[in-house]
Image 1 (cartoon, rainbow, N blue to C red):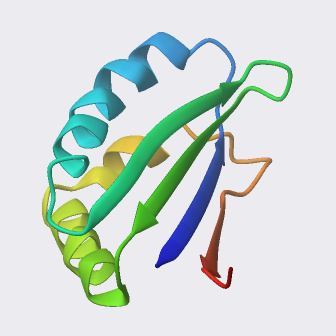
Image 2 (cartoon, helix red, strand yellow):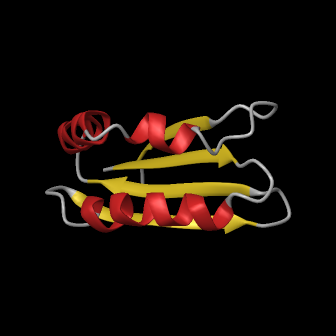
Length: 96
């Protein structure tokens, strides 16, 4: 099992637009084979959006990433990113 934590700092004033674009991604991802959890969290103090994902396997995650890239989500979501604060993706393997 894998946990992904993807943090994207947003430009000021774009949260509503960002949510409109990201909602279909979250809804579709939850239906993908191997998805255990896919949730979006907002830290309003930092103006940051955080995706927390749990996948059954590396293969399930790779399949998901192919779908996301094919749909153009990296470009769609990066238009809302604050260029002064780089995004960060962390991957954790389940241990216990």
